[in-house]
Length: 447
Image (tube, rainbow, N blue to C red):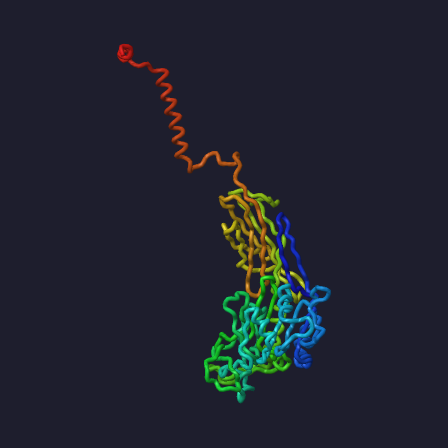
C-alpha cells in the first residue's frame, strides 16, 4: 500500500497532531478504445506491479461514476481518451475538477485531436493545448526513423529534473501536440519542453502564417501541484506511454556537429520517464511529513506555552520523506528549510540546521515585542509536497520585579537624580548649621 496524500495540521499546545491518509491505490483509467489495454500494456503492468488496482473503462461508459454513496471510490484518475466529446455516466468536467479539489491525482495524455472536455480540464489547471490538428515539428532534433517523414517524431531530453528522482539514461520519443502555460498560474510548471528549433503546426498544411507556439515555449509535458497537494500531469502525446515508444531505439538526427557517427540508444527513455512521472503524480514519492515539534527556553527540556520578551528560545522539528522503494519514511535532508517567528509580519527568519537524522533546529532571542506570535515553517519546493507548520505562542512583557536593576542607557537619569539629592542635602546642611553674619541680622531687623 502506497501513500497518496499527506495532511498536516498543528494545533495549539505542546503536541503535534499529524494526520496521514494512505491511498488504497484504486486507479480509474478512461480510454477511447479498449485496444489501449494492448498498445499500452507495459505502462499498465508497471502500475499494477507497484500496487495499483486498475479499473479500465471506456470514457463514454454510462455506468461511470467517481463516487459511491457520496464518497469518492478512486484515488487516481487516468484519462487516455483525448477525443471524447462527452464523458459517460456521472462524470463530467466539473466532477473531474471536484475530484482534484478533494486531493486526488490526475494523469491526462492527449493526441493532436483534443476534445473539448479534455481541453477544458487542462485549461482550468493552466495548461492550454494548441489548436486541434497541430503537431510539434522539429527539423533539427528528430529520430532518424522519421527522416523521410514530417519530422514529428521528436527526440527530447530537456527535462525538469526536479520532478525526477534519477537522471535519464536516454532521451525520450515524443509525437503529439504542444501546450502553453498560463503565466498567471504559479502552480503549473513544465516537465519536458521542446527544443529551440521546434514549432507547432499542422504537418499537412503549408506554413504560411506565424505559429502560436514555437521554440522552448512549447511544453510537451506539464505538471501541477495544487495547494491541497493534489497532483496533475498533462502529456501532449498518448504514444509517449505506449509499448511502441517504450521499446524503440533512439537515434537523434541531424547529427551533432561534434559527432561523426550516429548517437544511438538501444532503447528510449520513455519507460524510465513514465515510471518516474507516474510515481510523482500518484504521490509515491516527494511526500514530506513533520512531527515532534518542540520549542523551549535555551538549556531547558520542557516546553513553556508562554514565553517572555528577551528569552533565548530553541526550536526544532522532525521532517521525513516517503521512500516507496523501501516502503518507509526516511530522514529528509535539506539546507533551505526556514523558520519564521511572525506576528502579522515576520520578526525573525532563521535557516533550520539539519542534523542528518531528520531533525531541524535553530535558536534565537525573542524580540522586544509582546503579543501572540506564531512559529511558521512554509516549505514549498518543486517535486515535494507543500509542508505548512504553524504553532501559536504567547509572548508576555516583563513583570515589575523582572526588570534589570541597573540600565546603562539610563545613566543620565541616574546622575540627575543623585545630583538633585546631593544638592538638597547640601542646602539643608547650610540652612541648618550655618548662621548669617551679625551685620546682616541687624539690617534685617531695622527693615
